[in-house]
Length: 146
Image 1 (cartoon, one colour):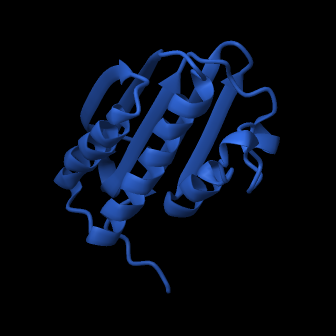
Image 2 (image 1 turned 90 degrees about the horizontal axis):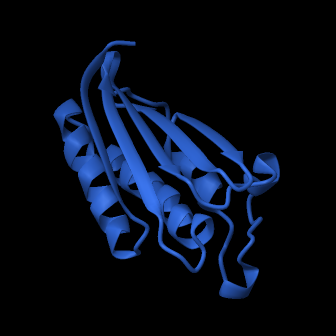
């Protein structure tokens, strides 16, 4: 699919940068004229993905989070969030609703379920000790059945 515009950046896995990532993605996506509901969906999904990097990937340390956003033909928004943290040994298990590795910290374990619900496509690739890449896509401006 043809790339119309692209944004790439990286930032430390500090909790204050979650808001930055969310704002950067939605500001960039504004070029596709999304609805308020689409913006809310994008913000929530990006927040969940970046928070996973901060809380799980770099537990107790600080690492880099890489963000790539592409505006594609036909109104598609592509978002990739990547870390080089501890990785996920069992991705299918981690994607189950309510599964969490941080139960003692009162984590709900709904991050991937939220991302999947708010985006049209979600892909998670990970390797223990090597990091995780979350790729999300959303087609903007498409009328959906209620």
